[in-house]
Image 1: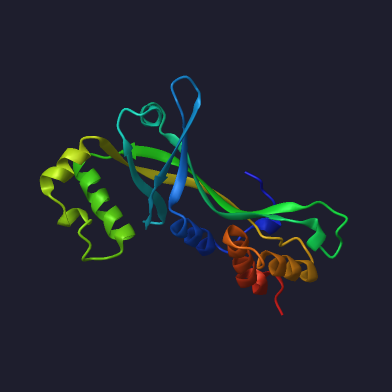
Image 2: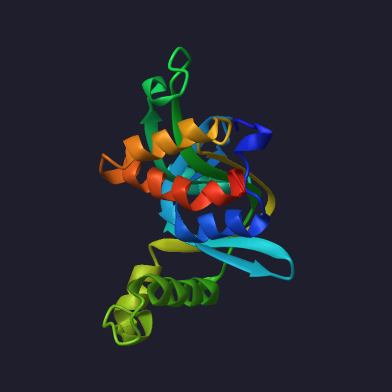
Length: 210
C-alpha cells in the first residue's frame, strides 16, 4: 500500500469508522497454486477484547473458498470514494495532477465457522443491513426450512485482524489556498467527486488548525 505519513488519519477511531462505513470489501487470498484470488463481499466489523474481527460468508466450492481453506492468510480491502484532481486547480498549476481516495488494508487469519456460527452471522447481517426490526427479510422472520436449505450452499467465517494499514489521500500535502480550491472544484461535480469534497471540507480543521 502507498504509505506516506501526511496521508494518514489523525487517530485510529477515524480508520475504524471508515471500515464500518464501507463494509463491502474485496477479500484477497492465495490458492494452492500460489495464484491470487479475490471476491467481493459484505462484512461485519466487530471489536472484541481489543481485537478487530471481520465476519462474512461465501458460497461453498468456489475457487476463492477453496483458496481460503488451503491458506488462512487473507487481505481485506476497504475502499471509498475516489476522484481525479487536476493540477490546474493548484496555486502552482505547473505540477503533477493526482487522484484523491481513501482505502484501508486489513490483513488477518481466517477461521471457518460451524452451522450455528453461520446462522448467528446471517441473523446479524440481516439485522445490520435491513436496519428495520419489522422487516420480513430478517432471518428470524423467515421460514426456517428455507433458511436451512440456503445455509447448505454457504459457509461462514471470521477473520482475526493482525494488521491494519490505511491511506486517506485528500490533498493534505497542499497549501491552504490549493486545498480550498480543490474542494470548490470538486463540489461542481456529482458522485465520488462531491463525496471527496465533503470529506475534505470536514477534515480541513485538522489539516489547517486556526
